[in-house]
Length: 310
Image 1: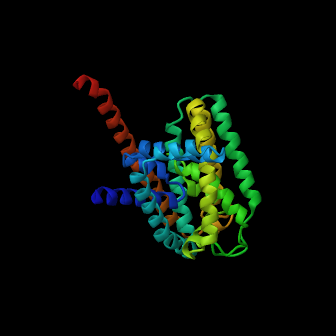
Image 2: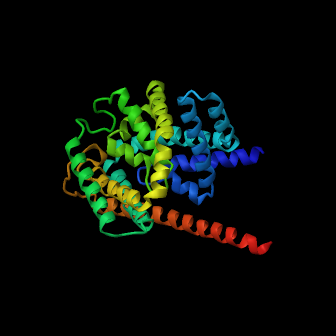
Image 3: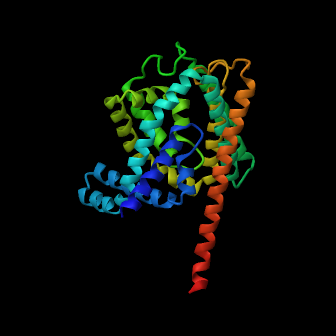
């Protein structure tokens, strides 16, 4: 029992490590490690319970809570929390000391995530391509209007309001449970990645609590809708997600100041290192995705062979 719990904590740590980095999906890691369906089942049960409690249906809420796999979910959340707490400070330091290199790595991660999401797009027709282009262009323009920060260091700009942490938590949590798109990338697009890293490293309980409350409510309100949309309009949703990732590359352009600015500057002498790190990011995600695909194929083959075995 203890070994199983420890193993779940380790899996949660790996998933949390992926969620900290823009471009890598914690959902993809869950697929690779073969616990995605179990996670989604608990998330759906938990969000259904919150929905029942919101309607003041206490018996219905507790009934849904009983369906949550707590023995699995609690150690998983502990592992995710450990990863965020231990890695946030490291990433924040690297963003401050090596903004070009970190942005280049993140750019490679997101670029390969676009390739992964494209593979999930079954219908590549004009309507889907139109959604992709429109969403990508709109986000690219909107991010350009955001402007850069007034300081060189991530997190040294004006502190966002508490409602911004609440809202970003509600939006980012939905991406964190989906394979193919990173919750941290959503935070980058919202301009909340640096401030949230600061809050984690500085142990600002009020801000973190506000973010978690937003994530909890967002999960209850949006996760069911999101899964419904993926079930009914899978390709349109995937096209929109690809558009979001394409547009987000504006804030990941390494020059002149990495994630601190939306100005598209000219490359400097760090080009070879930046290109190398971008390639490393691309290869990392593609390798992880290939492992996930093979695991998925093995599960499908095992499932289809069971009736014949009997």
